[in-house]
Structures are given as C-alpha cells and as structure tokens.
Amino acid sequence: MCLAMPARVVETGPADQAVVELDGVKKEISLALVDGVEVGDYVIVHVGYALQKLDIDEAEKTLALFAEMATQS
Amino acid sequence: MKFIDEYRDGDLAQGIAAAIRQEARPGREYRLMEFCGGHTHAISRYGLTDLLPPNVRMIHGPGCPVCVLPIGRIDQAIRLAREHDAIVCTYADCLRVPASDHLSLLKAKALGGKIRMVYSTADALRIARENPDRQVVFLAIGFETTTPPTAVAVKLARAEGLKNFSILCNHVLTPAAMHAILAGGVAIDGFVGPAHVSTVIGSKPYEVFASDYKKPVVIAGFEPLDVMQAILMLVRQVNDGRAEIENEFTRAVTREGNLKAQVLVNEVFEFRDSFEWRGLGSVPHSALQLRRATMADFSEFDAEARFGVEYMPVADNKACECAAILRGQKRPEECAIFGTVCTPENPIGSCMVSSEGACAAHYTYGRFRSAN
Ligand code: SF4
Image (tube, rainbow over all chains, first blue to last red; front, side, top):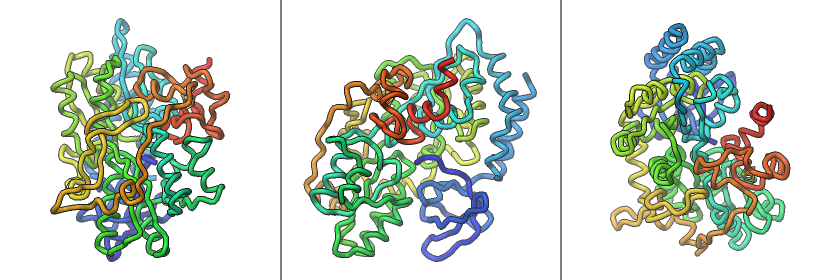
C-alpha cells in the first residue's frame, strides 16, 4: 500500500485533477495536497494523491553522492 | 524509468556495500531498525541483507499499516457490511487480513457483504454519490501518508452534503510507534526513517529520538541504493558516537514536510486518547479520530458513532508471532507455522498479507536464502 513511485505529470485539469505517467501507464490522480505543480514535474504519488513534488536538483545530488561513496571504498 | 532505475544500479550498490563492510567495526554489532514496511519490502526484494556484513543486522519495524491493525478493527468493518448493510470501501491490502470467525473482508464479500476495493478515497466518494440510498463507509487505515487523502475526502463530503458517507478511522502515527518501540526496550542502534511518511511530516518530528533517546535516524527513499546509503550513514553515526537526524531522501523530504497536508489533517482530525496496535498494545496518542471541537466538528462522518459499532479487542491466533515481529523481537522464520501453515495464499497473521509485511516479504523473496 505504501509502495509509491515518482511519476511525471502529463496533464492538469480542474478541481486539482491531473494525469501522471509512469512507465507508459497513465493514471488520474489528485493534486489537492500539493501546491504549484506543473506539467513536466515529477511527483510522489500515493493512493491516488501526489504527496510531494520531487526536487530534481536534490535527486541529482543524491546520485552523485552514491557514486562518490561507491568509489571511495 | 526516470528517478527509479538510477537508484537501482547494481554496481553502485556493490560499491556502497563495500564501504559499509570497510567501515563497520568487526568487534561490534549494528542493530538497525527499518521502521517502514516499504523498506522491509525493498530489503527483501533486492536481497540487501546479502550485501551487508553479518554484524550489520536489519530489524523489521511496525511500519506496515495492515500489519498493525488488530483483528477487532477488521471485525468492525465486517460488521458494518453484514449487520448494517453498508457498502464498505477498502484498500486492497486489507481484504485478506484474517478476522474473527475465520472471516476476512474477502470472505465476507463472498458471503454477500458489499465490500468494494478502492484505489483512492476519490473512488469511495464516487461510490457514495452513485448509491445515494446506501450507506458507504471507507475503511480508513494507514500512517501519515494516507491520512491527508482521507481528510480531503471528508472535507469534500461535507462540502457536497453527502449524508451517506462516513469513515472507520484507523489512522495511526509513526513517531508514537517509535516511542513505543524504544520504550519496549528492544536493543537498536538506530532507525532507517520512513520515506513517504516523512514527505508529509518532515524530518522534524524525529528530532526527539536523537535528543532524548540518543538514537540516530536516517530518513531514506525506497529504492535499494537509498537504503544502502542510509545504512552506511547509520554505521558512521554509530562509529562516531553521534545521534543525529540525517536525511538521505532530500529529493522529497524537507525538515518541515508538506505543510498543506499537515494543515488539512489538523483541521479534520484530533488525537485519540489511546489506540490498540497489534504487537505494541495500547499506545496513548498514537492514532487519530475525527475532530469534535465545536468550531470544527467532523464527528458526523464517524462510522463508529453513526452505526454504534464499538471496537472489541480480540486475541491473535495463538501460534502467530506477529506481535513479537512487529516489536522487533522476533524474525518471521522464528514463527513455527511460517511458510507451512501460514503462507500468502492462506495467511494466519497480518504480517503475511501485505507485500510490506515482514512475513510476506520474507516468504516471497528471502526464505530460501536464510535457510542456507
Ligand atoms: S508466519 Fe504467519 S502466523 Fe507466523 S508470525 Fe508471520 S503472519 Fe503470524
């Protein structure tokens, strides 16, 4: 139930409605819990609601950190 | 898949594993609890324990919403369907949880109960709109991630004047459960903190575990590299004698969390004085109920009050070790009926039902490995 994944917003509509795409599959979700999400943003979707917008800069930084950790040893 | 595949890179995982092996001191044990069932699932699915040295031990926590729900709570939902003729809407995970009298929601459905599986609270509202002459109850379960969606639904029901919609509220709170775990005296050196719960509540509510309990917490994403990195960060904290809140999941978690969601939850819900958890027993202020204040009274949406279905505690199956597993005191393979009488096809305890449950995750991905 808690297994949620980052999905890309491909469409926004009235009443906080949006469509996200994950691996080619489209799904209708609600943006009622997040502000300022636009088409193209990545959001973490859980039980049909976006819980948080993904911070792309932070996502890249974390990946860089993994690479650093993995090569130190 | 962007922001998923990169966090599953096998070579990087080996590299981080090598760093953990190098830094974990041979003379000591590192007992780390992953609170959340999503992490339990990831650890089992990707075989992460195989990458860790034997002195770094992962202990499963109680962060699986279906697992911690006591039998009596499922009984209430079944009673609503069978005795009050309500349409009960539930997330899929709850359907197969064993209840009293050899029932489950799925079996109650086979016996004619109106049980509907929903993907989101929006589906439950739709069912209520489509069935104006029936009572529709949403079985609201879960930690801080599922609570805001329930709050949205309750507010919409109020705005639309939906008189046939109510919720059976079982929303529970992560920090309260962490307190209960630590008070229970299980020996742990630190926590891998929840991913999605923390997107909502932020990292701030964990600070007390560092300051008062001297336990490090590293919030981690659900992908395998996230978990490995968090373990490395915990090993380092333990080595340095530090107890800090660190955040590996900065791409989605801030210190403050999702304020919009927090405000909504606060508007609709208040603390229950006490709530009984499977495994942890009654824990004060560990769950929510609909707010009853005069200025903001949402109690009309409370199914327990509307139908007079009280919670009645029921003992677990005698053979089942779920309670000890949820407290971090036992492992799935220490249950005498694990994998024989109790399987995902025929679960005896709740930990074998959801893919986030320790027994189910271990059965599906891990049992052959640990048998060797
Ligand atoms: S194997 Fe089944 S009965 Fe045993 S602890 Fe796990 S869920 Fe409970």
